[in-house]
Length: 396
Image 1 (cartoon, rainbow, N blue to C red):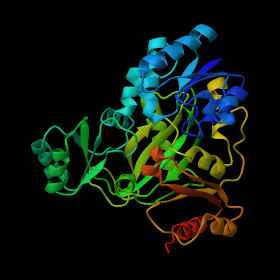
Image 2 (cartoon, rainbow, N blue to C red; image 1 turned 135 degrees about the horizontal axis):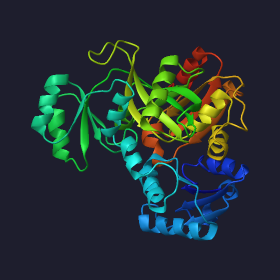
Image 3 (cartoon, one colour; image 1 turned 90 degrees about the vertical axis):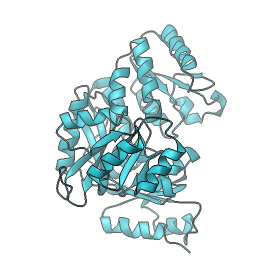
């Protein structure tokens, strides 16, 4: 089997997908813009061959790299980056080279925030009302229906980038003064916590592994206001979330992918959408959750999701991973460089010598949504998560 992996060196943990595929006997062919001599040894070891392009943004360059691998190795069985930024380019390459997997038309449906709502409706999951931001006057008519605040965001975008809360007429005027460079949509505001169903599905859209992450109410505010970040991998997956996620996967016809499905859990009743505690659709992301989240899932669920992904690609079932190990709450607490914290990493590590599983600084590309420096730790009891969070974020 020949598998082309786009950008194996970034994010820094994604070489693990390549490594597990290679362990399963797959010929793993990497395409990236990092010079080969600058790749970490672990990345090099995870690949059968690497093709360096000047820019992954250049479709012609990446196209030539795929053509080279197809000429040298024969039929390409899979092409993937597992990275939302490259999903459409991945799909175009699969379309142009007739590689199995989601084609361009498929990917447009789950990268467009407006189109994905139709699929949520097909799945029977409530969605927020929306319009396209065509004019100030039309937007004001919509706001008259749903009330302030509303949220505006690019119809196609990554995470909470360029997403804003409009609280009054002046905010809307300022939004239009800046200039709308890409298609934006406006949605009614939903009060609730963000919760996600993450996992891996087989070729028939059946869930073979999943977990639940619970996030703060507004990732949008974290990005726009440079706030601290705290979320956690839950011990267990709530039944209603699992049911909703399975319906979404079937509606989108998602096959053999790592997925990250985001929902609101209402914190107050919302007429037309549901009662407090109900699930409302947010966004569908047909790639792993961002940053080091796959590693947090591994620590919390005592599994290796990189290996599960490789097994699904190779065998369409889990072959080399047991799901019978202990489960924990695994939390992610991230600091901001602009703030002064009471405790150093060394002090916190001494307090939690066995619970801390990861500690790193994030690249500037990820820091906006994920924080500058993060601590990840796992605990058996949720109250210990709250205590750990308060210690990591305590200020001088």
